[in-house]
Length: 417
Image (cartoon, rainbow, N blue to C red):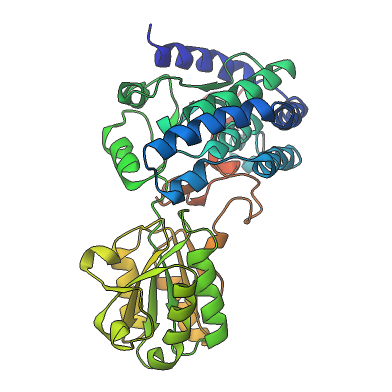
């Protein structure tokens, strides 16, 4: 039996036991998992150092190294995230709806665990802990298959979490990572119909496309983030500058960072140069249209191509386009955006309402940075990903997104005539 199939079999058995656990049992396990990360941080950091050394030898870009790197402060933050999950309301058993049927049967729709959740993701070891925590909180078993760059980190984190969960009384097999980094292992996960209840890919466009196109198990599509900030003609210039720079530079290698700046032509000559200069001072290269480059505001500017409007840079790079107004901005975003996070900066209420209503994205903002699209920032605790699809879950996926429902019917002898 292959490693993947063996893990899936254990997870299926664990899922049946997890479904019968109480909220208190799962919360105690989460606290034990949080403490284990800190207690075993030397082991985890040593594994991470090995991953970083190998990644640097492959000339891995700085933005990916940032995602890969762990330190004591990041481990503490991951640990605190697990603790925060333990105090969130438990969605399992929540009554979504209830009614008394005409025949006297009391019918309720109740939240229940998915069962076995699998994740295929890239070089982000924090995802290992976030996914495990969310799944344990919601009574799901989880199979994790991280990218090759973070394999040692992921396995070390999984060992710590799984051991702590079992020590707290949860079943063996509730938290597992695939050791193999071969592509065949990922493909096998995609084909385990009937053993895996839902598969969540989290990473770049190529990974997500591969899973969506090839999986035989249900998939929740998570988001590539070609996010925009649109500076409307009624924007406050200082606010626009702060939001654009934060959305691009605060952490450029993540999916909710801004990748394109749009600005109205009626204000671009005055408002755009200070924004461009601050971006350049922060090390950003701008890929700009002719009107932006004609301003001569910065040196680090390149001509934009059609490909730039559709690019998720995940780096200190941004595309910039001058638009004729709100209509063109909305058309551009709906044409090139990835339905992740979009922002408008404006003091015009009607423009804000139109943007909110007409832009097709999981999260839309007025006068705020796109960087807030995050489970923690939204008060969901950790997140297992950001869904850009429209079925079942959309946006940051917290606890409720990892549940399904069943109908519970209570009768007193009714039969159907």
